Amino acid sequence: MKKLALSTTLLCATLFLAGCNTTGGSACDGWKAIRLEAGDVQAVSRSLGTQVLAHNQHGERIGCWRR
Image (cartoon, rainbow, N blue to C red; front, side, top):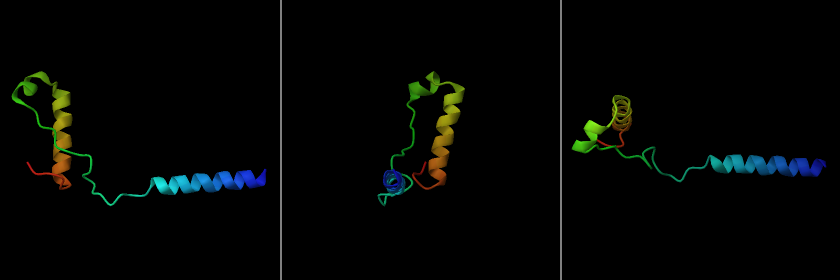
């Protein structure tokens, strides 16, 4: 029983540490600016517009893209 508990603990620790590994990419991987078309501007709610703006400003602030 003790051997099973130790094996399980080591397996969990290994999986936890492997999940923290990075691929050498940047903080911008998987990100891109959200660009609205003319028709979208009229269709989106104020709340969604605020969220899109915050997303784009954050990406610009951390250097993922420029305006």
